[in-house]
Length: 633
Image (tube, rainbow, N blue to C red; front, top):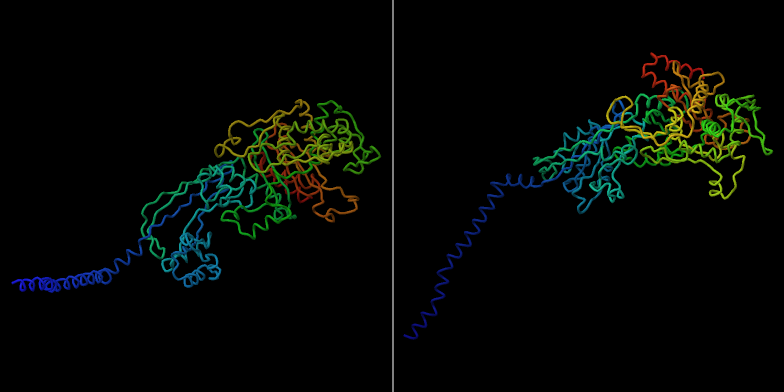
């Protein structure tokens, strides 16, 4: 029994395994059958469905750029706005057949495929998921070609973005300024704390000054895209908010008139370099501002190309410099009126006292010549200003001395910025004895006072400083801060709050009246030097100036066109009208232009004539007379 029992115990487990083996085999076979059936279902029966799901499983965030706010002139006319710019980009991660895609894009965009491929390069890492812009401002025709084939081209994206547009091109370019991609140094500044890399910001001029107002707020949308980058469903969207509007004191009609004076195709002359500033002497409103040579700010709107940037920065005449604010020049004879005011206030001369001008002034064994070789004969203060007699002011300057001249010049804010709200405004230079001792370690020479008295020597000023100083003469002594922005379009005077008065000149009203009378004689009377500044029906006052750039010996032996341009004299004219109740002051400077009366005065006249035409002073007569005067020249 024992042996039998042991046999049964030994055969039990084997019998159990054999009994279970078919079940286990069947279970494994069932598992593989079920797996195969599921695989058949996924690959064959539902393959197309899941392929579509796989191709649409990416969600992409798209930034929607906001339009910058518009910049308007004082009457609401658009100077800077936004237009649509059609673009094409490549998403490297979605680009599956590069050669085929670039070949097709080359045909659609009329470009070489190799050039397009070079722009994209071979980005790696995270850069594969960042779009590379091939073109940012396509014609609608080119953009339409790509758009119509976009679903056949993997990795190709099209978009329409807002792009800055300056309606008048180069007009007022230094005033309006430029935009560009935010710089690294700006991103590190607290002023740009809520900006990100790649954003477009104002980089100069009004665009920079009013960046916070002009800047819009970007929007965005989340979209579903397939593996080729094709957009399927828009999941959600936030609309961008455009920037605010800025309205200027600038008058587009006056700006056009000013710009026209510098354009050779308008007057049939070589192009002019220089600056023009027009102010309202009652409140400081800037009515026009020109700096030449200039540039087209549209070139910066989409990112300036290297060739254009190189041309602008390597040009010896510096087209990017705002000459109206940062150009420092000897003022020449337009400075004489401030010497005259100093003499009247210090009582170093009787306004009726006669000084004889033989055409030269001899002192210290040196001869200082008058601009009129034959001399002016006997002249009093009024005649000396009217005819711009150098000899008279040599005498007056020596009676005053350089430090008293400097004192009155500074009282008119020469030697300090005018308070213009932006730009690299320069202070100019008002020389004194102490200044020369500090600067050169040398004593002041009396002969240098002679030069300073007629606006030469070390004297330096900017066009906007002269505009503010002459505005004070015109308005009775108020030194106003120039302002460029109004509260809203239109409105008399472009009201933007009360004018900012920076000071009152220390000159008696009767002295200012005497100077205004003399300045009116400069334009309106025989022998005055500014005949070409006359505006029919309007009492114009003004002063011409011809500022020597460098002293050349025996220049009278040469014609003007035989002297190199950079050595020729600067031409100035400063005028205001009406003479007895001024509404506009105009400063015109033509670099290396020669005579102020012949070259600069007509530029100022164009602006004043346009101003009074708008006021209805005449019915077309002024501009016709102006063109006739130019033809006579």
